Image (cartoon, rainbow, N blue to C red; front, side):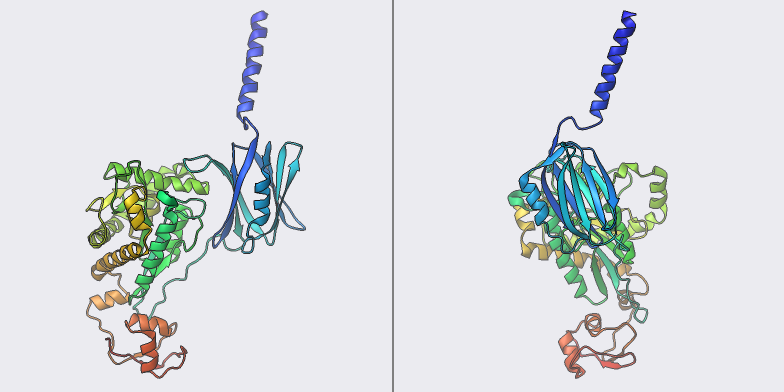
Length: 447
């Protein structure tokens, strides 16, 4: 009987211990808050001192989204920050908060419009602690759409999707003097876009054009929505050894990485999907295999050849970590129908390289090298039906005239024929940019 009672007591104690472990072990504080605006959603982040349990529900008339966080309080400075957040472009009209049940905290988001909400927690990492994330997706805008390429007399532009890594809540690697990867790679991508768009036959689109986060799978979806011919992901990563330096170009490998650093970088980059609350490990191996096998062999070949061309051009402007194209299982490159490369512009963890990466002049050189290498590739492998393919196969622009087609604009034509917009206007005595279908435009000679 005594043994039975003792076993019963032990069982109850173990049960109580397990139940206590299912929730937070201590009261949590909200230490800070931030709000990020992306084209299709708004993200509210609450920095926590410990893990929390929470519940959410929706109220109507007026529309409100409510978050009840158990055993949590916030500092006065955070309450002031919540009230001071810039909500001008967000679907939130006002944020209110108050104590509930003496120990819990209720946060109420008063909404301007209907949204789809997703709430999740993120574990602490080397840069920040526990977080509660609230994503509010705009109605009828779950995914922003990029306009497709305009067909013009069977000679369309080659579309280049430029993907600056990280963004928003995910700063990427951090260098000395608070140099952040997300800011550096966005600046390089913007310069690369401008350089592409100055070339006849090319149009570059940015997957991320501001400081906000996009999940890795969404980046691939945006490239496909843009009908991209080529995908370039731009990064400036870090390594545990600060002496490591040099730029590299990577293509996808679904097997082994070509070096220890390649494996490390791929692991770190793939973790960024956790910033969005998505674990890549949950993907079905069968589904992943089918996706990769659809047309991956041909795309890998083109990716490698384009990578070789970019490496050759980058060697002229910056030291290289590896002088050959590297391979690693970067999730962002797993688009089966678009050739893709990932360019590591350098190691931001290296103090000397970090200073160069933060330099506007060096960013411009990197952008020019990426563009030159890419165009070197397309001068040989341009997609049929593009202006570049037409040039490569003996096509020549008319030295005298061009007949306006539906969808043409004067600025596009100036770019297509490699003349300035001012010269095109003056040569045709045009006072403004109005043109009409069927109109004959005289093309000024190139200088």
